[in-house]
Image 1 (cartoon, rainbow, N blue to C red):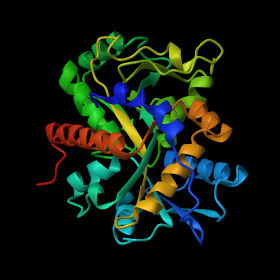
Image 2: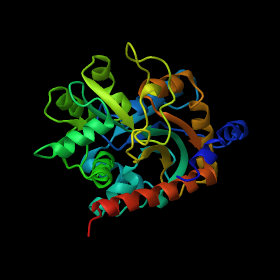
Image 3: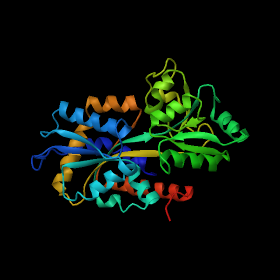
Image 4: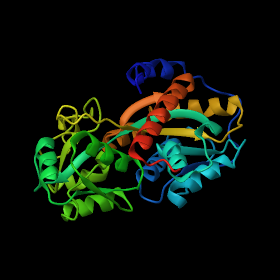
Length: 328
């Protein structure tokens, strides 16, 4: 993560040097594997990819989306692990690839797969009810003064938002009770209804209730603000949300969105997909999706991607260990 800015600066050069391939290409439908259920962020991204690839004629073969969210996503990871040499399966990966093997002792290691590209980063936002505290300081003070732990809604025990909750406790001394729900949408509904005091949903998961004036974004867990400046409510853009560090809460976390093939594919097959996704991220569909979902643009392949994965994997292991989420 230390070299993220430096790596991102190389994106333009990567685009410019992406080769065109006249060699290997798929001869049967390509399966985009999603380690989650229907309607979630990964499923939505897969559907966008499917539409963009077909609309822009980036692939001769059809693209199908395969949802394998069983066992908290372990189904997808083990499916990819068992598909060595199959170049027709592509996994949309996120921090699950680091966290689930640690928390559940899953016999999976991302090094067993073939990295293709990191195509986006997710940012997380601290949200509270619009009738709650108006600033991070007021929120933390209220949590400390509460007779019982503030309820924090989330979407997965021992996952990204749970880790963020634990580190908020460590940084502030406030106490939170983490409540996992089935989706970010359900976590948003619970916050609107006053059943929880907060959540750390991704921007898009709280977008509609923010527009409706039912929740308030307090800060974003990144070193820099979300880049999009178009107004998404009557008065605010994503860029108007301060960073948590600006608000005195020095906690940062970014989640990768990366594409992986199974292990033991050929270099030519791997390069075909690097070329495919370098074209995909330049489509209007991808750019529109990134802004609507408030995702952080990035494109990494090859050695830059491997360096990112090694650093990101180490960071996630450190966070999981400090939070006490590593299975013994």
